[in-house]
Length: 250
Image (cartoon, rainbow, N blue to C red; front, side, top):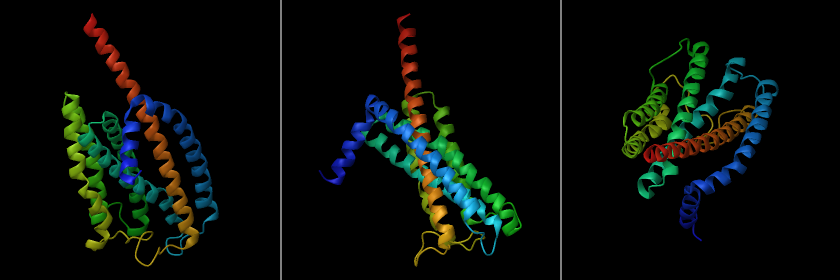
């Protein structure tokens, strides 16, 4: 079976709410345990054993929260855009639910990214905020998340709301490219790419390793939150369907 067929098979398999509930019942606690253990190990490693940065000293340790939260913020949006495509093409309602849940979680991680970046910027740049390319494009990402959620709440017809929000998420995905290359296209206060760049990472291995480990821990935590919230969303829809049926019968 080719990769495209495997992908389509997986999409169709998990699109069934019953199958997803069975799968997530097993996967969710695994993700939860792995995320908890990874976060504990990661932050002991980052805060106790990793050395201070040779320029920013102890202040740079906030990167172990800021950078992973930025990765999750953009990764969650990429997932939301893919789920929106699946919903628009194959009309899988679970994909729409995944996009909705991903938007809520992604908005929270984007807020965390902005807050920690501002805290980091004060001692490093001498200012809490600067309207440079990277900071502004991440702020735009946060507003897109909020706009997506607001649009879904503003349209009473759930089908129309899902379609409109899916289109908005696809249009907004252009901003992910802008975020990625903002430090290349414009001269900004924000440092250039330090982890993924031509010629290898500019971070010392003793800082890079715990950073990548914490990035993995954040991704596991995101996976846990996705499964938890998707299960909740499915249960809410089932309750709503039962209430609607009972109301119509009476």
